[in-house]
Length: 139
Image (cartoon, rainbow, N blue to C red; front, side, top):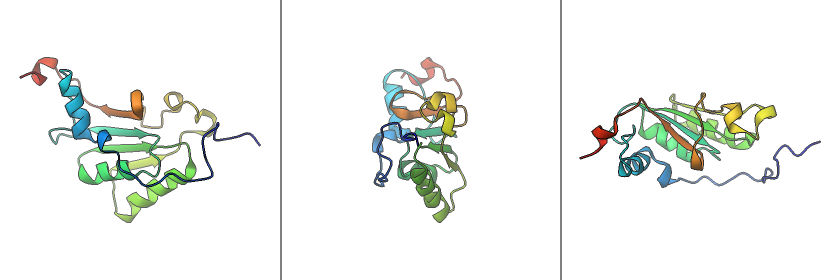
């Protein structure tokens, strides 16, 4: 049988950890520091995607803290996806979807479109928003 993990550790699940730098408020601050207004910092609805979500703790926490957001979490490891789904179910979150990209495309998140068709960006985090003018973000 081929190595479905493509070299990644697949026999041990990742720990449940929270990545503060992935929160919408900090991502919005980073965008604002470059003159771009981004959703997530002011309480408006947004869509959030965590590629390589591990156990899904960060994605679930973001979903719980932002009930107006649509959160997508994806990981190629089925154990991680199951953990993310179990956590969402345990606290009855309805604004998060956790899934695994199709097996034939699991090595290419962009082709597998695991996050509702969103295009992945550096660090595996994306916040999709309606276009905002740069002028609106500047003081």
